[in-house]
Image (cartoon, rainbow, N blue to C red; front, side, top):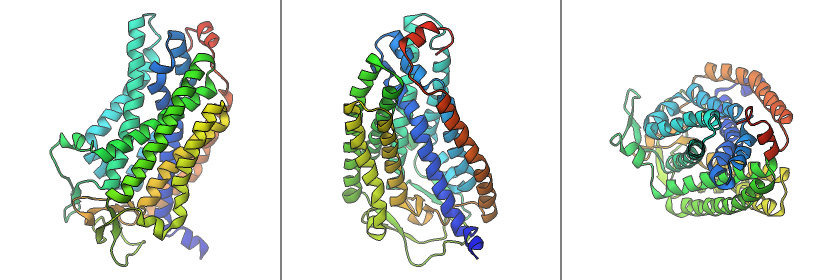
Length: 387
């Protein structure tokens, strides 16, 4: 009986919703500091050696960290096909910009120090800045749009239609609330990147990272609090009307959905989820204090917990919605109406239970082996073998 319940369609849907959150958080707390360091390179390093120190703090791990991004995209494709179809269609131009940034980043890492030319290296440093800052901003903008609802609908044969001309699919994303969400994301990852630099670098680079990270931590907390207030008093939410089955067939038109005054009614129905925003704000403030006090590893842990709280608060507040529709609420995608089949989710779970521990073990081993600070002498003495 217990095994039957654990393998039920409802259980697998919730499990994959949780696993998707884990993959997104894993991406943010690992590749997030890569993007943060990239965005900070022109500011924490004033000399070529200082900038190379910053680059080499993430040099050995950035490629492995991107595995979380690939896993997240794969999970969306396999576990939530309608979400994949709608998001990649509606956010196509924004995703193209993000993809272009992710393409530029490895090229910049590999070629930046190949020529001993100041102009060449400076150009690649700014490329690393853009490849870190732009995705960090746009990820937050995308979340802000999802919270407000995305203008799409399904036809009777479940063909998704995204409203607006092709160019508005990018410009239209940049509304004030979504830009504020982008500021939350950008400042949060700048904070995380700065904390990583305080752990992995020393001297001038560490001192500059600590100063910038303190400002970014406060900015992240203030922007997140402002977004929460805006969400409470200026953004309508969504809810499913009437009784509904959580184990029925996946059909995006399966439920009746209506707008509500605010998303924050979720905290009245499930008060325990308040732990997520409390974690985001509390650990963000503790990260600020840790940076000011000069603590390193404990501050990195607090920074990760703050990111966990911020991202978890979005998912828990919106549950069971994963992409509401602003133009046709009935077309909104939820945990209960947009998953793959029962069998597909089960097979994917078996694969996840096999391979996720391997990925986590390998990642832990890599960080353990490569732990330690990057110094200026490391860069100058091994100039031809490091980034």
